[in-house]
Length: 78
Image (cartoon, rainbow, N blue to C red; front, side):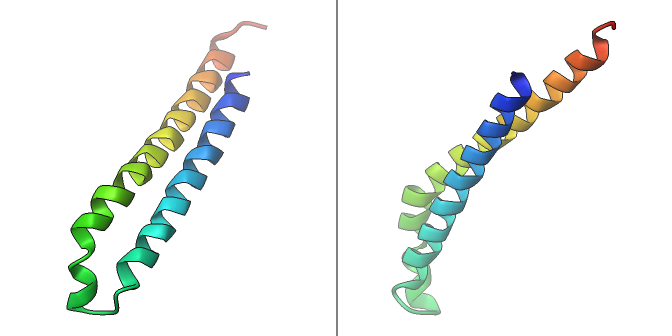
């Protein structure tokens, strides 16, 4: 059950991080290229960086849960 929940967490984390990352890039480059785009960087990091970080942390947590489940399976006697 831990492996299934861990896999779900990894999938959800990747979807959150991917969607917020792509939206952040779209907002960053919607103003143009060069110095105009860099003026939007603080706002993009503040608004899009938080969901991106949460998505990455959820995916890492799912990976840790799968690793824990595998360790439990190895320790269990047959």
